[in-house]
Length: 441
Image 1: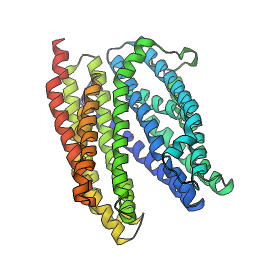
Image 2: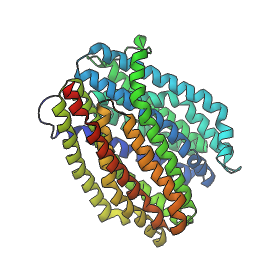
Image 3: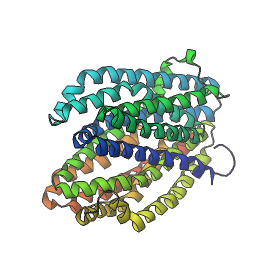
Image 4: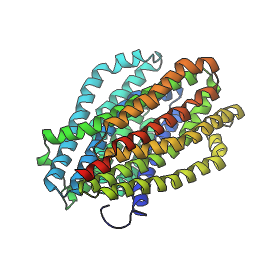
């Protein structure tokens, strides 16, 4: 990351990241497919009832893991072995403690929370059991995500991909065993997910333990270093809140979609499972930009930070463009894998057309936000997302959607909100000029 041409290096770093996201989505789809096929609609509904809750918990801590990634990348860049070791051991212990904290609190509120979300009585027992089993696995789930962030900081995106691949295969096999053989329904899917994460976390722990550099993990050295934790949280908390608030806005959009009937709901759900693959591609280059900029900022190579930005943006345009092209050519065929009803497919294609218009704005937003985070600047991108994305979407649902009340009228919110955010991100980067300020310092 610190020497030689950036072309090629950026792609080799981003590709495993994108594949990791795609594989994770495929394994999640397998969870739903197994429980829906072999345990019935109530078990499937129990899994679905937990999607938003689990998503909010995971996205918050994944955001915080970005803080660990940036702190370690900067320390690698300036060659401070002590800071690297402190950050690695602080991040991993924080992940474990955070997971235990969520488990304790979650177990106490699982049943009231499901009732608050309006889960039907016939689904409630399975939904609560699913959540409680999942919560028991939060320490290892968060541990894996922080391990992956640490490895990304030094340029290793292949090890997390290999660990996820192995764990994903085990997850599918355990799904079939627990659901079909043991008749555990939704709880079986949850238990399979937890055990698969134990495998992936164990694989990455072995990789880090065998590392011969400052990233080597020694269990006896796990402790919280206050100053390091503050640096991680200063960058990671805004990123986590950004993802969580965006999830809340998307829940509101889903409630508006629900008001348009079952056909639109089915078409939107099918389209989401297809289009999310594009997001994983463009988001991978945003994460790549963060790590490359972080290391070069730490090394004092500020002009190379700008080169990393433009290289990531250029290669993201190509990769995202190719992925969108695949959707244009095969989108309708992919939707038929979920449902062959012409009306459902029409609704799905409507959603995908609007999202394809929004993806270029999303790409710019993720790259520019990643650029700023590489310098340790995390709050401004979070505020852009809060106001430009979430604020616009909530305002659209309240003020515009009731007047139009069509699926097309609702889907317009994506290009509009992301367009506003992309423009705000560009202005923010120009105003802050982090690389110029660093040069003067």
